[in-house]
Image (spheres, rainbow, N blue to C red):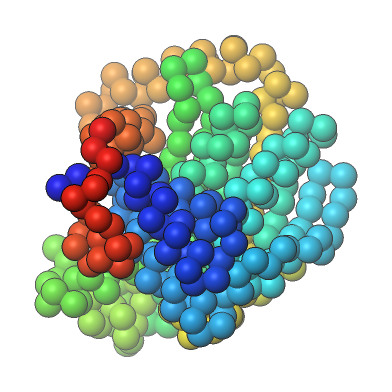
Length: 337
């Protein structure tokens, strides 16, 4: 049975409020998680509610914390979140980066110490909708190692960037690991193996066995040193550059065993400050058309998931039974579209 989108957001908001979150804070989290669910990314969706609950219960994430300004210059601000729930903090940071970019042509906001902020597409597209070239990235606790090494040094460290074109918003959201940590955990719990090596065992040998990868490390994107260098870029942008810790010291992102100390980095460039937005949008779309014509498998990132999102807004979402029970959803009174 499908459940109305608005009903799920209401239920998720109420769930987080019951755990001590303020209404505005809870609503932002519910909206980001439900959007990820609707767009086809359940690992960044409502299953994260249990993780949030655990962090709150253990006292590693504090509800209703207001981040304070750490460092500021004309176009750059650093926010110290002190264990705040990350969703509202990140959304406000995008809006602040947009505001700065409209003033100075470019705006950047770094966040230190917020909890997991979820689906990065949400924030990148928010900036793009305001006429920005928007880049959003974050670091996570160590899970990825260098080729030939079983030592975890990098996070899976996703990167999203978005901008408006003449036919809508382009948004690419990628992890800088060969696979996600959640996927490795899931495969291990199901006693399945990967079709090819996506990580290293603790001795550094390439492996497709999830248990060995969990004991060792996930491979970087491309399973190469170049992939590690891309990951290092993110680690520095959302780490030492904004006063955060180096990636191998990051805690409290996936497992509720420590207070979050990771960083997030948001960069907005005002397209209007660089060129004609109309010319930019037409030029980029022309290039995308050329790419599509050269490769039948290429699709413009973000647009398929936006189609799924529109379908779910109209027709509702099917949820796993455990989430239905967690949110205490009454299916008999579900507001079906």
